[in-house]
Image 1: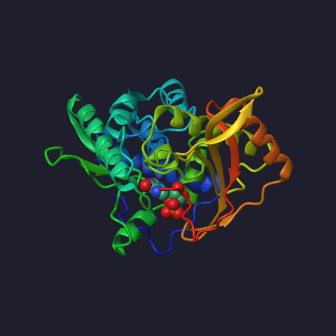
Image 2: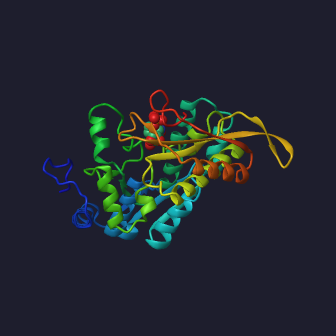
Length: 327
Ligand code: XMP
């Protein structure tokens, strides 16, 4: 019988050997729980769902169906990496749904942050449920619930966001193989399962994705600017040894334009705001110091490579008074 709660005396998983012992035990428990039945998983490409996918592939192989919904608000290269790692390398049964148009059409003209989040969350469940309905004989729904999710929902801090949201008529039994683990342990287990380091150690990324970094009503061209600038920022941070050292870094493209000059001609384009922060619990955050030479490289690359951008700004504001994200 699987542990429903983290045993008080459980040692923190920090080594490959400990991770392998956990994996061996979980694989046995998953096989016992699932038998010859089918399992469904919403695979976002985030750490938790990726580790759950890898564990289930090891335990029940093709009995698992992963659904990766691209809501059009993912970072550059993310859907491609999910397909490469899970479909091509791990041979998972993966359904890829490019729902970009559906999400962006629904979001067109919507500027209120909470309404945007609700649309993204609601549409996500709808797309996932539609895919689930097309499949026969699914008995289980796997989820990347982790121990802090359970503690926080018990304390009433946040609703156990993983659990459900699916329509009433879709009843699945839950499979939650990492629910007694802390985040750092999930990463160690993910590495031992052979997932790439940039997937396992990636920075936090909100569910509504780049949508909250494109403040106000999202347009495709401004969203593209956020995505391209973010890719440059990630590339330069990696080149300069900041990847894995800075807790979270990203770009925002606000909905206003200012004048500039390019090739001797006046431009009227957006600024890109860079945000790079450190924190332990995301309740407060400090701003990362960035070497001036790196800033100059970022300004030069972003203004020359990202269409529609003529300025780069750095956000020096800690949390509080600002939040980490812009919406
Ligand atoms: P804020 O902006 O509130 O963000 O200072 C704190 C941390 O939470 C992340 N964040 C989210 N994560 N779904 C998530 O899974 C969300 O809707 C969401 N909103 C913010 C944010 O990226 C930061 O790490």
